[in-house]
Length: 152
Image (cartoon, rainbow, N blue to C red; front, side, top):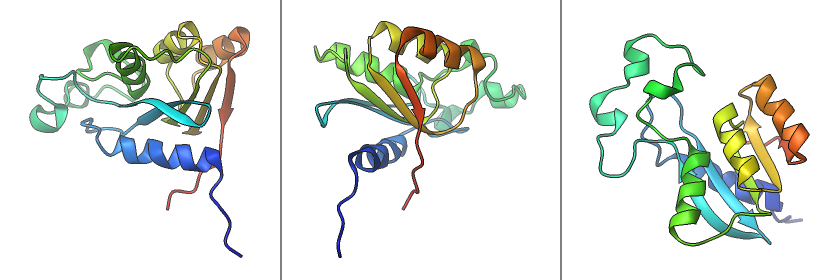
């Protein structure tokens, strides 16, 4: 019997496809904002438009030996979640009440932005443990769930 892919698997699969556009040399992350089973905006991590990409000029954090999750302020790139919010805003699309599917658990900065953008839920596959981000999601009432997804 042939079964259809679930909606969460469908949207999570799309996040991994979006992540393939990433220009980060350390981690490819994709995100998709969805409401009523419709994609509102997508984003991947990388340098701002019309600026050199890390793929082309290298990664300062890598050159300095900065561990993952530290010194975000010296990174050229925006996070996938930030780009979802920006793309939605640029095109006049509200993500209030939307679900965000993301390949990787949002960091604290993205968590605060998603809470203020009033998303309803965040679903992610890969852990990026941040106790404060997790606590703030719980305090805000935003559903925050790690889901299993087997990449094809």
